[in-house]
Length: 308
Image (tube, rainbow, N blue to C red):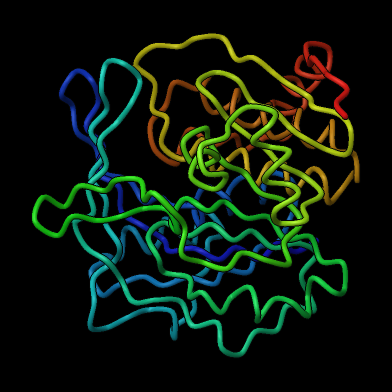
């Protein structure tokens, strides 16, 4: 099966709570590609990188089946680069240090794809993407959106990224959305929790809404809300966990067509990454049996609620 991922490949400089700083390739294109490969998917990337990736980083991408075409390399601009400063309260400060050119979505051929993940990191996907993908949606193509990059504002003086108060993109023709509590609030004018998920589903005519809040992950599908609670962990590298969840859920659902197992395998992928206690891309599970073990645990631990 084949998954298309729309997102910049990025360079992450991560400073943990102890003051140690590491650099890693990242972004949904990287985290999503690796987890999709674990689910035995081929990945087609719609991405951009800059002129500043050395051969070691390019080799790392190829070794992990993250393939960038020659016309996806911008020879004039650097790769999108973030600095993440982890706080002891579990939150983080995010800074944008450089930004590559937008992804060209003018001539899209998605016929060979089984599913699509739209996951911008900072406005690199043009607003026209939803119009351009309407043909794919009419063919019942599964399209998952993580709107984080559409909701990020950037202070050019401090480089600090903050959450916008409203979205300025006309979202339409998608199947599913994954949003954290803050993003859900922006998309629904302040409504969170189950009511926010219901409102979001109605607003965008969605089949699935995945919502994350602290250590809780929920899925709304039809008249059921499934919820999983993760155990509290301290001093973790949370970078890319949302990307792992999004791609893990998408791949599992595309293979099994079972929403509950999709949630369990998505969350199982996240647990596998957390339990590795490794930073950066190396924490992504490379063996499906690791994810399967965690998914089985999730299946037995899930709570569900029937809604109107």
